[in-house]
Image (cartoon, rainbow, N blue to C red; front, top):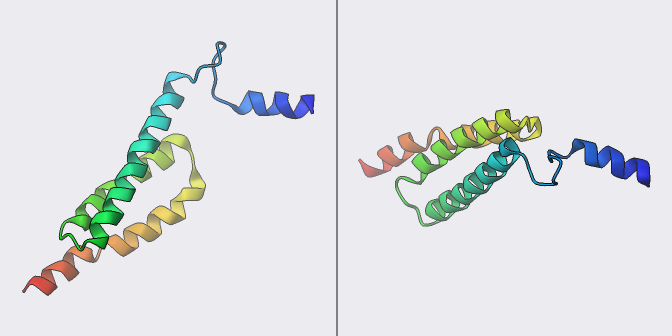
Length: 98
């Protein structure tokens, strides 16, 4: 048990006092902001707001930045799939309006 705790403690981005270092705190804050934007974009899309796709594309760009900054490579396929779904949206919205 002690070796597991030691190995786990080494991987955590904590400084001596047990507080997150500045980079980790910034990444956690960015994750919260990007998550809120994702929820907001989903609500806008559910309400069929015309510019929900724009929020979605900007949000996916922020997710991509977060994926590279935090090295969370497992989220990369999700980002590519979401971009694939969001990219044609402006064309479909314009076609429905004409």
